[in-house]
Image: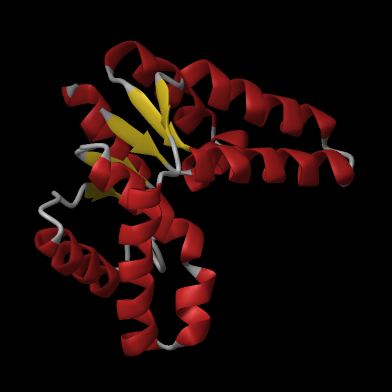
Length: 164
């Protein structure tokens, strides 16, 4: 199982290889989403439609919907764990960074609680930043959760999907 972040779906709009990888992936691996990603996809689609890119908006939604095997709900436990990530990041990096990363924290908490082993994201500066990943690991260890591995590049995603 792999959770695919919004950033990968957005990249697939302009990169045919990534689009094809996602289409092939759904035949090889269970692609999981979260309520947060679903909302981000809807928001991105609405934005694309508002700037006259109706085809891209429809392509984004179609790709997202066609690859999904399931969605992790935003439960009290997910919110509780993500709030712990937020508190730690706020103390270490400041309120603005913690606030900006709220959705990232909820996505990672969803994956951790859902037992997802891997998260594909091209969001290397925030969600998959090494210092932030250490915070996930610290909190998850206390919560007896495993922290997913982050697949952060097109090449890594291709390798992962080839081995699935």
